[in-house]
Length: 182
Image (cartoon, rainbow, N blue to C red; front, side, top):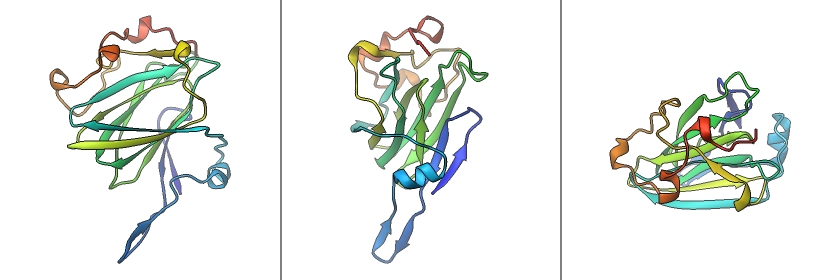
């Protein structure tokens, strides 16, 4: 397993070691021991999975403390542009975004720590996305940022006028008006 640091502290891309042969392939998508050996100690408590069609844009979502979540995101089928935005007010990268292509082919994962908003866009015909969380969902602590906030300048890999976005995500505020407690 390999960890690729990003320009944002604590936000990392995880590349598993894939063993392939004529039968197919095998890899460990998560190993508590291997993560701890890499200096990442997280107790995941819930796995979530979504299925979306091309053009779907989900996010940008977060949960405030004490229900803030660390997420380990991966794609089971298809391709997404996965995005994280640093909401930690004391961070030198506050308000900066990072994006990475996650796919069933490249098997990369994005580890999104507490203090970040997260979202993704589907650029393949369909995509199944799975993510591990270290905290349970808590509706009262949820928050979000509008996906097309001009201060974030996120390239979602699609024309946003064609994006399929939930009503809930369409009414989220820009980052300067979000209710983040980080």
